[in-house]
Length: 375
Image 1: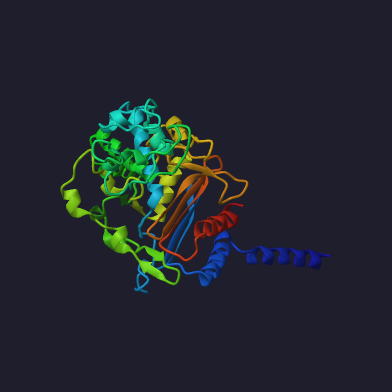
Image 2: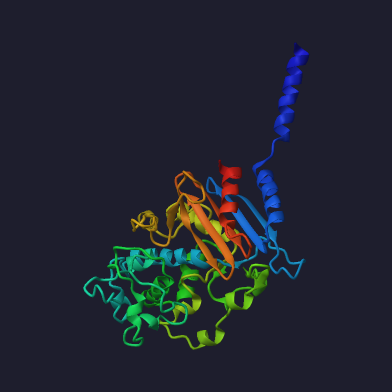
């Protein structure tokens, strides 16, 4: 009987010792995934109980250089997750009483912003940040904000949809470039410098919008898939715009830094930033609150019946069916990025991929991290 008991106990120990760890499970699945798909570089993190419990990097910063792998210090242009940095900055200014979500964008910008089909309906800052303004990108959004100024562009009316502001939703990049301009005018600081001074530095991150202020050796090249191969778009993705910035028109040219998509940051530092939102404005990693709990929850509260989109943060079950996560995705120049978290259960994920043939790579990686480390 004693021999049988001992044998059963030994078998149990062997079973435990042979069981895969979450990291081993995830990395085995990722190895198979990477063998089946083309991926330039990828960096990912898992946060659980307010700690970064896992981070890993795959691939190369430059696919022509096998000696330059993606690592913890690699930074990427993260596209539309950048919008949440703009909204976070506004929460600080709202708390200071310098601006209000209900303020008229026309007053904040100094020129008329009105949907011509609804001339009496005020377009507010809240509408810009929640994409409920009825503004669209039909006239462009990345060259100048003058496209929506009726005193300069005779086609400014084309910047508006047919529905009344506040009563519809359309994701629109011009919204955030206008918001970035307003941030500059209200704060008195150049857009990129405000975000770095009041969000990036307090959270002890290495990040920013201005290419010339960052270590370019840390940039991951970005790649677009042309149907057959990855094409390097580094020069477009990281265009420094040095000459334009040297002749900067304060209170007008914030879009040179792309408040809608131009943040550059590593997956680890993005996870640290995410942890602040996970804790409603407080970062346990640096023991610092940068926005109030009330305003942080306001950011995460959906504004539209059509989309569960708040103020540059989104609620979705797309990546974890049956489980609602809060966050944002990004996509530009071939890059795909994701930042999603569960504020109640205190876990979350960041993924940044510099280029792939897989259009569903964010789902493929986030769902694997959830299955391996959380579920």
